[in-house]
Image (cartoon, rainbow, N blue to C red):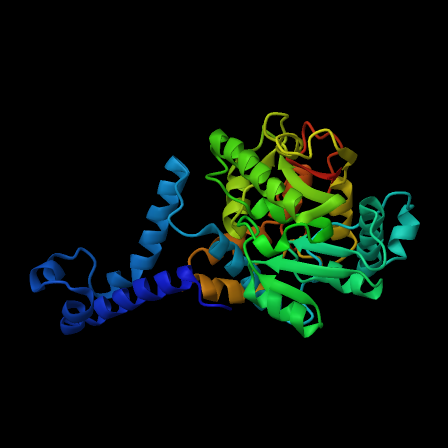
Length: 386
């Protein structure tokens, strides 16, 4: 795991706490510039000093809930989430595909005869068809994850450049002989202008955060931020280039729930709101893509089925004492934010999005709510042309 700003902050907090616990006054004076009087008046001493990192985290979260102000960099929370996910599941753990499959036109029997790579490759084929990609095409994958799309495209003679905020995912991609960079695609990349035939945003836009998911104004800011990103994408595309978007939208009836809050804090993100004033269509229509929509689809069931039919899918609920979860609990003792990730997995919050129910790992009992007015979340596909 790369040492980012959050790792440094918590390292300093823990160092201070341990020094205070050990009552090393000379070190506190020399390196933390505290006077003897300040040390003597400090409210937490001895064993209580070890509670400081947890109390600071609790205070930070209270500030975030009330004001929407995040004092830690969201992209660093996201990076740690994905790095810890790979650490917790380990080799042979969760499937490396972090997105949906494509099951349209398949019977239940046909689905059962297929495996995770079949679902995923079927989706990739559909995406390439929708984009109009062919051998020799150059695609920019924004939020490339573990680069499964890039690996598949390589077999088709299609070049893919992947961007991710996770250093571990970049290493993973390079180990496969793929091209991936650790970059934040919210920022302008001048060398990308007019360089790509197609762009893919496959589920990564949820990591663009503009405040607390409990506050309605955050969703307006999110919609505006995505318009800014789509404007960048427009400049990266060649003439007649196409962009594919896949993203989860939160039902306005559910955005103030504890489940939504934990989901968003676990991975450092914010869904778009499933409302015409805040959704991705509104973001597209605020850019030069306006009027150039080529395709739209509700693909929610595909995400649900991808989990149900793959016991190693990342969306599967996990038992409280599995080896991966025990690793997360151990990390939580040092990095308290990891506890959100522990709850995310053990209460099956990923699958809550599709039916509004919690799913304990020992007996998850997954169901799918067909009515999107009742369902907490909906996944949309859209394709636009430059």
